[in-house]
Length: 305
Image 1: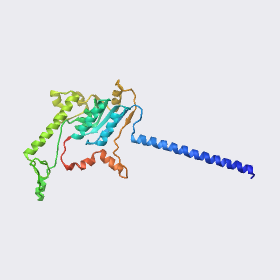
Image 2: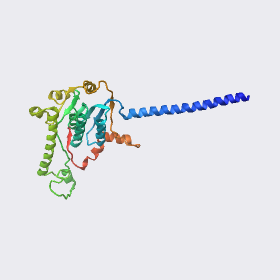
Image 3: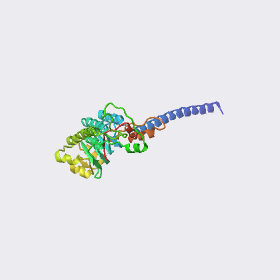
Image 4: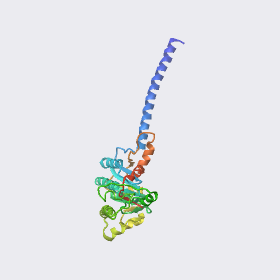
């Protein structure tokens, strides 16, 4: 091989190495861009342009700081022009439902909020729906159940059979009077009934204010029973029969919102790092961790029974 040929082939090898390097750089950048796009899609990160936020509220409702933070993001984002809240919940704690209602009313003060009720949106789930200004349900959605409940087990007969006694030292007769380990006193039951009645008046007042129901019309819906979506529409508890499509159509009809905006999901980040992250996310999302800890004491619930 002549010197000219060697120089020629050496130059070709150098060009190939340079081109291979840049091909590798571009391929890596393309892979990173695709990975970022995939992560954005999987995480439901909202786009920067104007859009409608969509949040799923499922399972038993508890006081949920992560959900509240997600709703606060919706409230403060200038890119979010409206919120669709899909509710599929039998209810939950009165405090958790109250927190949801208050946050939704803050959002509704600056942008439209629409609730879409799923298979069941009763009691605390309906409290959340009251936080919106427009409520849509399927014809067979189970909703209503306007009331408050507190339950606790009574194992005193079982303890007597087993010969077990619970010794308690307390500051007064009404301190921790509701306990599985002894019969409640009439005074204790009366005190707890006052607690239930006060929370029920609050719930009933929300229905009266948000749905403009009074007198016999309010009495008819606020006795704890559940209704189908069709009956709820007749009684004034919801505004329309339908689902997600009807929610977007309603938002498109509003003068304050540009028609045809895309809808983006917002999801509370329940997942933590680690191998068991999916399990933790599932437990937190479905309220199971809180249910396991519920034995610490009685709670007020607004939940369909």
